[in-house]
Amino acid sequence: SFRDSLDHAFDVSDWLIDAHGFIPVPYIITEPSLGNFGFAIAPIFLTPKTPYIDSIGGKKRITPVAPDITGGAFFYTLNDSWGAIAVRSGTWKKKRIKYRIIAGYADINMDFYRTINNGEERAFSFNFETIPFHIYALKQFKNPNWRAGLQYLFLSTKVKYNGTLPSFVNPEEISSLVSSVGPVIEYDNRDNVFTPNKGFRAHIDTYWSNEIIGSDYNYGRINYFIYAYKPISPKLIGGLRVDGQQALGSTPFYLLPYVDMRGIPTNRYQGQADILTEAELRWDFTKRWS
Image (cartoon, rainbow, N blue to C red; front, side):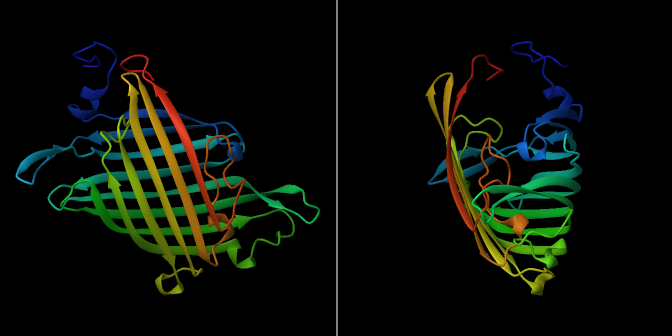
């Protein structure tokens, strides 16, 4: 059935869960650094998971488990950037381990901004051919809201620039490998992972890149964020985001921290560190639309 049994609206839950189908999710890309407009299509498969039943302090507690997600995506933007990725996110319930694997290929045209000698800001246009691979696994603690684990990032990147390389780019960065590993710890008590109404997620992770693990760079990086949600009224949900990054050592220019916020082009404001905050108000004006 493609109708919900309660409100009889169009709904693909039965198709995804019972018929093991998939849904092609369309997405409009509005990132300024990618030409302001583009389109992505992502076929998504969902496999639901039954909840954990824990006993804490002699009381039973039902803890929901996020569904396993298998999918991919293809995107193209007006500045001729394109790419394809595959994603697998799931949970090994017996081991209480949450994992995610991402791999793909991307051909990206992107501007980086620097202040030149006369004090003016200038855009430098680069092309990146990159093969990313990222994997992490988090083990759940006795308290089901806490998790910790390890992550690994691999990037094979070729950089193209028409003309003499800018001073902020090292010649070694034209073709290089990044291999990074580091710990992850997070707390998450949100009521759901797709459209949270209450709770918060706090996360911190680090990357350590070194020649010992096959990298062309020796650097470190710390990333942290908090997403918090609270109902203001039955139909209004408030949200708050605090996000920061810190680079240590000889970080490649395209991996330096940058302000990642709505309306600001990616890599417009870069440096060794950044921190930002952002507020959100969601109005659930009907049961299905916000």
